[in-house]
Amino acid sequence: MNEPATDAAASARIRRHSRSTAFWSDRLFRAVIIASASVLGLLVLFFAYELWQSSTLSIRTFGWRFWVSRDWDPVREKFGALPFIWGTLVTSIAALILAVPLSLGTAIFIAEVAPRWLQQPVSFVVELLAAIPSVVYGLWGVFVMVPWLREHVQIPLEQRFGHIPLFQGPAVGVSMMAAILVLAVMIIPYITAVSREVILAVPQSQREASYGLGATKWETIRRVVLRYARVGILGAIILGYGRAVGETMAVTMVIGNRPEISLSLLQPGYTMASVIANEFTEATSPLYLSSLTEIGLLLFVITLLINALARFLVWRVSRGEVRY
Amino acid sequence: MHISEIHELWRRFINAVSLALTGVCAVIVMAPVFIILAYLLLNGIRSINIEFLTSLPKSPGEPGGGMANAIVGSFYMVGLGLILSLPVGVGAGVYLAEFGRTRYAQVIRFIADVLNGVPSIVIGVSVWALLVVPLRSFSALAGGVALSFIMIPMIARTTEEMVRAVPNMLREASLGLGATYARTMWSVVLPAARGGIVTGVMLALARAFGEAAPLLFTALGNRFWNFYLDRPMANLPTQIYEYAKSPYVDWHRQAWAAALVLITVVLVLNVIARVSTRERFRALR
Image 1 (cartoon, rainbow over the protein chains, first blue to last red):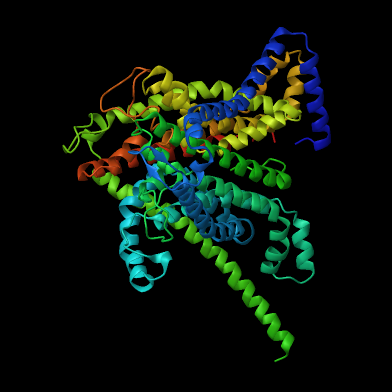
Image 2: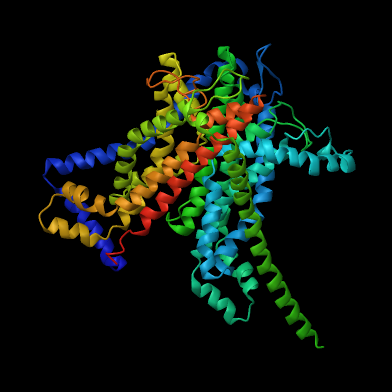
């Protein structure tokens, strides 16, 4: 490869050349690629506009009470989004708590611990987790995991700890707990992949300095590598959280879809994404549809903010070269 | 034993245990892949047959029938999504790679990354409002457009990386021979980046092929054959969802068969994606 400095100079030269050109084909080419790039910006505006337009009826009818009301009664046309916000918060945060240690451990294993010949295969298998479609996770979840979970985890938990609100029965299988487990598995590959890249970007000199001071490998990882990479790892975690918030099909299939606010992990719940997936085609009245799109609007705004924050953090350490 | 020696042993012990634990994490993380693929293979092979691959669904509750229309519908709408997203995605990627340091490009790159994280269900609702409401019908067109919105940012970002990785000496050689900038991009840089762009496109196709959420209320689904753009169209992911929700045992069997078909296509696309980047720029380095 060329040296970076001359490469940058060459880039600048080529750019200047393309700009100063008098050929109509060059101008056309530039116009076409700028237009293509602009489509991305227009897409965001388009999503925001369509969601806002379709939500106005609900926004005008319920105002801010939409977000704090726990009524969800299509028959009486009373709509409040609190049960779904609750379900999304509980499932996504619990999934994150499960996924973060496992993802970080795996990322450290791939980047620092595993022998060279093992790094690629492990990375590949973890990437496969991200390749499995959501609806396949849901299918496996509802026919394999949920019955197993009910039999071997939920019923024993209910019998022993049923007096604690967290494990109040009856255990029916489809539940917040099932959704949390599926979500955790689904966000692990994203957190692992980005964390691995961030850890690999830590300069070798940092590790050598630590070894030179007599630190063990683990001490080096914990006190030097992880500390150096912490901003990027935080970005990776937030990125994974964004996935958990927006995940739809698998959650819809295992969470039970009941608009209730319950402390118990064994009870069915509902999330913002799953109520849209489950009820949108059945929604008959304009107000019902509008309420569902308003939930979509909130989901859009939240994931936009989460992803913007995550990108900002990951970019700061890796200069935008991370793939996920 | 001296106290410092005990401390030394303790540090080594913690070191060994912690490093081993990272390996345990990796094993736990990898386990679901094998478990899920094993279930898909076992249940899928038991459920799949010629009738499933070649015939239409029967009416609810009646055993037999298949998903031929959903398999074709999935390819149809993903193909439509590709036609719509490929020119825009590649164009945007080329812009980001070649003019990436301008303020505008930085904003667009940021938006592309953020768009990658927008939940697909939200894209479904937006396209519903754009195409289904005004045309007064669920349609294959709406499904294809929704899938293209998922693919555009993915294709743009991989194309950017691949075009950027093309060495500048190629550009300079072409310009030095008197080729215009557009000709250089078209005949030299894009062909050099082709393998990588194919990788990005394959990954985007794999993602789009498995997406059910954006098709639920755009393409909807259909029990019959349809090749018209303006009518509802069957597709594998939403069919799996509908069948898994149903109370019929035979539909559950068919959901497993459909999932096996789905995962096979997705994995094949992923393998093509890997193979097509392996060769890139080997000759140039």
